Image (cartoon, rainbow, N blue to C red; front, top):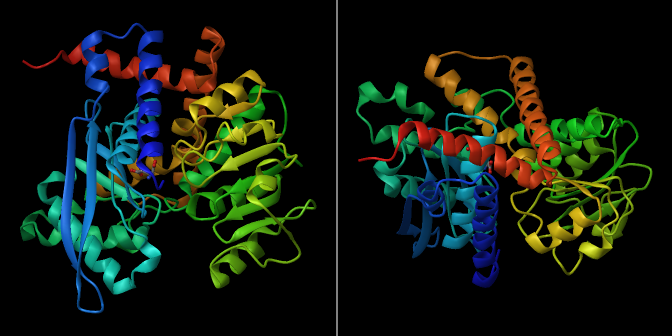
Length: 423
Ligand code: GLU
């Protein structure tokens, strides 16, 4: 996001998601007011040395929205337009995502307002290490556990882990490695973590098709975003027999009505830095991409991609929100009215934090699970949450998004009810 007007709107939308669910379950006013604001908000201004020898002052954030269910949990985003409002919205969504999946985690999000592509690897390492050091005791293996998000990856988590561990006493280090998840496997990461968000989205879609009594075999899909989430969603959806007819990323949009060869497209994107130039494929504009006559649309990039301005052009019958907040509230209402099935972000992209939880448990128990075991557990977790959302939707006659928030809010309310509010 690049302007504060639109990030302020994201924040309002996150607040509206919470307020609607609170109203639907008649949430106690005191719980409602706690959930309406993040518990802690941290702004960190820190200097980083560029390769030129000059120092640049960067701004980073960590917003801890809620920890009633367990340690704060959520990604670290590197993006040039990142600001406090965007991080607030993302942190709020994490609280509800973890509650919906019934994970023993709260919600948080953080990041640094930089374009990671404009930094060398050595500079990025300095950014990550200095930011982690500045976070200090505000993160911790039983307190607040970062993970990758847009613009960050396993390598980032490796640097965060190493920096954090080096600030601990030698006797505490092994126990502290679960301070971050999404680490490289060699550093204690879980098998299947990198593909988890994309695979989870595909499992949620399979559940939706089950609800509709239909099969995914031969269904066409268009995917916006070909990073970690979009590329793994494309692979998983192809494995389920779907035809990926279009993929969009920052370099452009490629389209082949006969279905793109995802494996070859991945190799191309890795070599060339994006999907543009892939052959055989037509190049489309972003507007043409959203207007494609496909069965399923998967926004797996930034927030606010489907808005009042382009929602009327959408012809897909189902949308999987693999990104966080890709559809504005206004556009959501139009889609709901038009009978488009939307799998909301807090369900659709929850696979990442689900496997982050598995990584945290494996670290805590010094265990190592096989890729097949992780994938089977992920599939079951997504299935079980999708079942609960479907039941709530049927019982209340509401949208899937409202049902997902109601599910999460019900758990949060009941935990506050049982614990009470101190003192
Ligand atoms: N950044 C991911 C998300 O938005 C994953 C968070 C995590 O694994 O903690 O859900």
